Length: 177
Image (cartoon, rainbow, N blue to C red; front, side):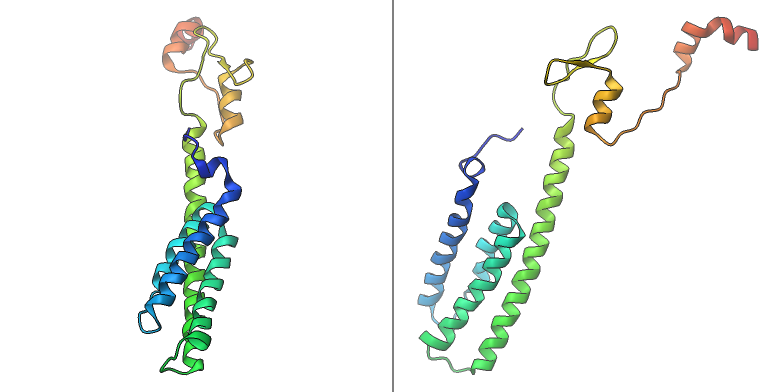
C-alpha cells in the first residue's frame, strides 16, 4: 500500500494548494505583461487539480484562469489587438485546457483502477497447509475459491489434474483401459 502523504490525509486542503499555485502564476503572468504569453504555465495547476481532485476542479481552473487573463487584456493592459481577438484567444485557451482536463482525469482514473487491481491480491496470504483455506482480514478461514472470487473477477471451474486422477481414481482409470 502507498504510504500516506500530507495531502492524502488532508484532502480538503488540495483546492487551496491548486488555487495558491494559480495565484502565483497569475501574478507572474500579470508582471510579464501582455506580450509574453505566459498562460501555458496554467497547465501546471490545471493538471495537478485534475489528477488529484478530479475533473470538476480541473475544469474550474481551465475556465477561470483564461478569463482572468482576458480581464488583464481588456482592463489592465494596453494591448495592440482588439477585444474580439482577445476573446477568441480566451475561448481557444478554455477549450484546449478543458480537453486537457478530460484527458488527465481519464488517465488518473485508469491509473487508480489499475493500481487497485494490482494491489487487490498482492502481499502475503495466510493459507492453511492442509485444506488450502485462506484467512481473511477478519480472521475467518475461507475456501481459496471464495476468497479470490470475492476480490477479483475470476471465475472458477473445477477439474482433476492427471496426477490427482492417478492418485485418487486409479481404480476407475484401470477399468476403462
